[in-house]
Length: 112
Image (cartoon, rainbow, N blue to C red; front, side):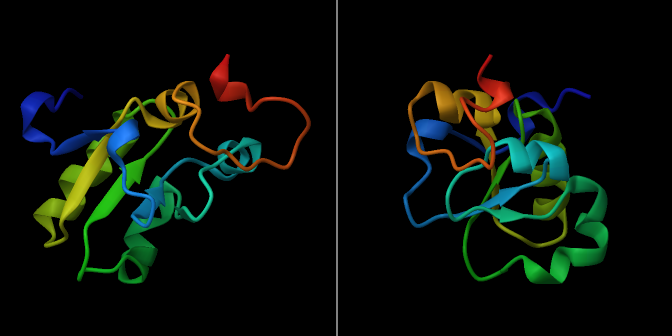
């Protein structure tokens, strides 16, 4: 599914430090490495947990590469949120040297 220019997006470099960052990857991806302060709600659970996402501020949505987060961004915006997709996802985030927390040793696998 290609959303093209229909998806409001921002480069990982431009995500504000205090942004509400919604990580929609699966649990094992989250465990491998995530942005500090991000909120984890897997895409598959978002329908059940959408009430946890604030509607009074901008939401930045991130996944591994930007495809799943683009789908979530479109859905959130259609439902009344103000959401932006983080282009390039956690791969781009890590390439830029932005901080990543992980539970394992060595670099997270999405960097490779």
